[in-house]
Image 1 (cartoon, rainbow, N blue to C red):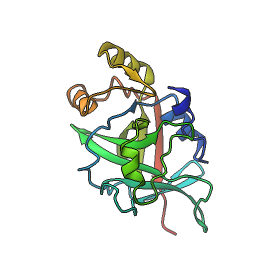
Image 2 (cartoon, rainbow, N blue to C red):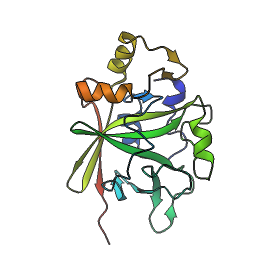
Image 3 (tube, rainbow, N blue to C red):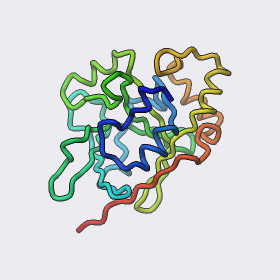
Amino acid sequence: MTDTLGSLFVRTRLAVSLLVLVFAPGCVPTPEPVGDIDTAKPDERLIGTWTLSSDTLVFDRSPVKGHPKGVLRMRQWDSGKGAAKDTPDWWVFTAEVGEHAYSNWLVEADKKGVTPELGTEGAYEKWTKKPTKGYIVSLLTFGRDTFALEGGDLMPFEALMTKEKFEKRGDFHALPAGWLTKYLEKNGPDALFPGKYVVKFTRAKAK
C-alpha cells in the first residue's frame, strides 16, 4: 500500500483493529468499484448502530443531495452527545457479485488524507472528476446481529495487477471499468480475500 493510502485513518479515532486489519496492510485499492455506484441500492443490513471494540458507529443513508441513492454514511458516535466532532464522515456502498457481498469505501488519495469530504451538495460530483478518487474494497459477510469486513491481501492483488499488465497511475492501477467485478464473478474472492484481515461489528442493543 502506498504511503498516501497508508494514512487512511489519520483523521479519525476509529478502533485500531479496523485500521490494522482491514485497511492497512489489508486492502484492495482500485479506481473502479465492485458493482455500480449509480445503480446500487442502500444496503438495509448495514443501516443502524454498531459497536467495534469500544467504538460506536452509525450507518445511515446519505442525507446529501446529489449522492447516489445507494451511498451510506458512516459516523463515529459519542454516547449521549451525537456524532463525534473530531472524526470525518465515511461513505460506502455495497454490491452483490455471485454469492458474495462487497463494500466499496470511497477514498481520495491526496495529501490531506483519503477520506473525501462529501458532506455538501456538489462535493460528490467534483470528487468523481478527480484523478485521485477511488475505492477500497472489502468482502462483507453478515451474521445474526453482526457483520464482518474482510480486507484484501495486497500482495496477491499486486501480483494480479502485474500479471494483467495494468499500469500503476499514482496510488491506483489503471483498471478498466467493471474489470474487478468480472474477475470476482468468475474467480470468487478467495485469492484476494484469504481471511487474514477480518473485523466483526456487533449491532448495538437498544437501551
